[in-house]
Image 1 (tube, rainbow, N blue to C red):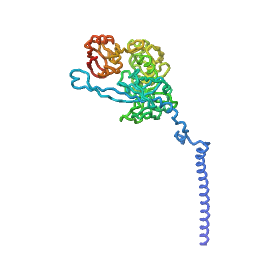
Image 2: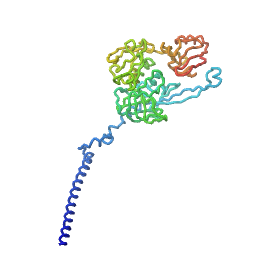
Image 3: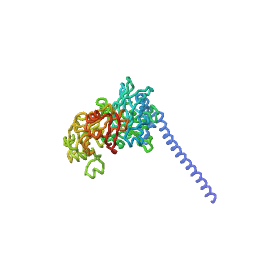
Image 4: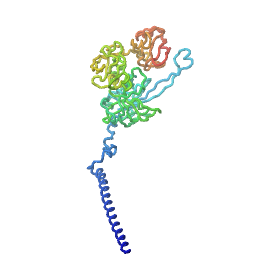
Length: 486
């Protein structure tokens, strides 16, 4: 009886083991088939592209996009020949104790060499660059991509947009066509082309990171900062170079980097080509930029301002002040109004508004969409120049001094608390440059006589016997006194 129980237990164990083996084998076969099917799905995708992977598997476009989408060779071939190396030289006056004591001109100077980039925008030799590249230049040399060198003439420059226009005596030059900076999109691929660290004809790629960016780097009164921000590598020497799209069209002029080291760390900024186009047209036609004014002070609307002023919707720009007798005042704009669009183009920041306004000249008419309280209205107005008129403004020059001048507006006289004065708007090779007088200097007296016009200045020169003493001040600095012979 005892043996009978042992045999039953033995055979029961064998049967259980067999059943367990069969179950495990069945599970393994099913698992292998599932794994094989998964592997086959991935293989089929790469080989035959007949199956779709989950969305998470194709999130990285570099894994699955065709390589031709990232081929910039055509854009580079069109752009590189039209970007030039701009080399400048100016003299740094070396003042001595004798000069300071007796008010004489410095007898010695040190030549200073600088360089940047430029973009040919017409086959007959017009070249766009940055104002800060050529601001103090006495001589300007332009070197093309084919290593040909030309002496360049400064047609004009505008500090408020940091744009300057050069001209070389040549024809049939390679040039870039203007694109449209209004239509660029964040994430769009771009190329930056220039001469960083004197490395000529360098191209780097990146994307558009932001639009209408104000980084507060320009000290000029009424400066326009509405930069295109990119992550294309830009370094010293790239200033004035081209920012182009994948079609090889010019969409901006590379101007600045945001860096704590002075070299590229991921952020670069370009002036939109739609601003450049208008500045170039003004400089060719008038020799200086025609700025249009509405006569208002604006603020960006953010959450703090909206809460403070009980603004229900954050949109547009806030009119903080309206100047008496300005274009806005005459058209009925009021402090507290919110401008949401100009000529049907929506604006949501002061930089956007100023960028669009910069495309117009005095005398042009624009239409503003304005919210005042709970009502929305359209206001049509005629833009003015800085003197409150609608005419084109032109500077007058005195060639012997190498300078151009403008009379001061009543607004500027009130702001500086003076009754007379003329503004130095341009300085080129001549007595002013040699004696360190810079653009922006406000002349109050010449040979102890007050001046209110260029004609006053010229009359004093005629009776001066060749000796000039000039008194005045810089808007962002102290008073200054210059004395020299002509």
